[in-house]
Image 1 (cartoon, rainbow over the protein chains, first blue to last red):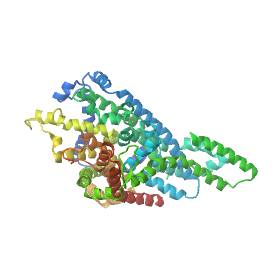
Image 2 (cartoon, rainbow over the protein chains, first blue to last red; image 1 turned 30 degrees about the vertical axis):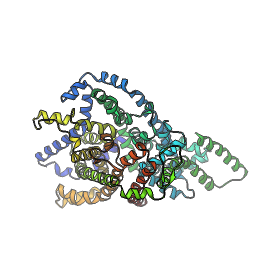
Image 3 (cartoon, one colour; image 1 turned 90 degrees about the horizontal axis):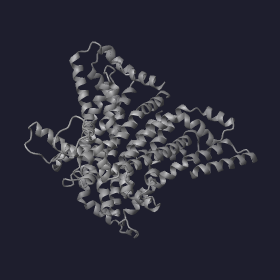
Image 4 (cartoon, rainbow over the protein chains, first blue to last red; image 1 turned 180 degrees about the vertical axis):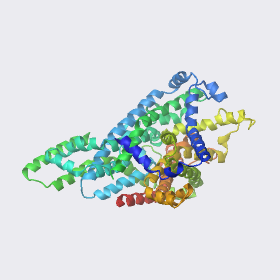
Length: 294
Length: 318
């Protein structure tokens, strides 16, 4: 369903199509050359990283490698001996998954509250949500450390889960989605059938909003996975380190062992690439669905 | 967890109440609406609002982050801030690196958005995917990679230049101030151009096709279509992008901090947030770090206010 919609909407922006059938060729070729060159520039660093990750430290340090080698596993094994990288992945994964689930649920609940209920101060409170959406969290860094300290959250997963579970962008977009695509009539009829308020949300509203929720959850998952500055403030024990902290300190951990360095960096990118490969459809689908319903 | 239990018990209460006297639907709904937004606002207040308030409080105090209570020092921190040449330097560095990053990024994104919105291009999806990829990857990884490309001893740049015979011996690129700044800027440009492009593509999609059709009938060429239709129609989108990019740019941290934690050479890549972090969490001068945050706060809030009013205008129109 949504795939067809994407195709359709992409074909809309083609007023030039009629004309460009007879367009001169050399310009086209130049255009493609430019696009391909940019694609190479965009991908080259990833390529170098993956290639270098499969070579010995000596090879990386002395010559330019353009073809894959066979040292990847060795590099990772050495990296693991120097610093517990696998533990770092586990930490990052636990934090990112828990944050996304809790934040997605709380955010959807909040969006539902704003979308379908009228209560005193609902406008002002929604303005606060929009304001916090643009507000950079780095400004409160010192106070954030202090809050975590007082609550005893330093060196725990919760120090990163709780603040990031308040996803203002999710509330904003899911509310828009609910406004447009969940008719009040459905909620009313469920109520007549005797459903409790909470039940209506869990059984009807939540499943119906999944496209928009999952799109925003993927974006937030990536943001939490990549979060460096908050993590480096509240995580000080090396067994609690997340992937970005390990990456930041990778030069200190492995000194001259470039194989290990590249191995760890390459490894850190893989989950993001998987999430993007799986989720890019969801993201676009959610956006298109929201736009089509208008 | 707690809130779930609370909701359930409340549900029971409400049902009981309804049996006794039929409370009106409206008041019942009010009650649940507030209940549903409560968990979110508890988190927001605890981890976003309170930290800001506490930073304001701390900016008037001297504190080393230990168990000893903060010591009130009045406006001392602010007086010091206005005389702090590192603070001014970090402001200059941040704005400079943002500007050098943003101008090429804007031009590139606009051009690419216009090109890729043209249906004649084959492999649009592929190009969009590959340009978008850098945005998603951990900035710390990208920054480290750039460091190793620019590194003088084992860096790929020196390897390429030497094998081409352009340079005789390895050059310490990251020790040169203009190169170090340019490295940060271009890395950020490389990270963000695909994202900006996708935003502009969405903007172009929203332009009514009739505009283009009418112009084509009148004999406009592609450049004229771009100059007189696409660009004016994208203006709100571009403005919004500039404002949000400034907010992101002012809080720049990951890339420069990973390339050099101290902002080497000679603090030329030290950004405001790096300065804040280094003073607060390396030197344990929390009070003064909070004062730096306030300086940043004043600057950022101006742009947040602009972005905010743009969003509100947009939502009210709908």
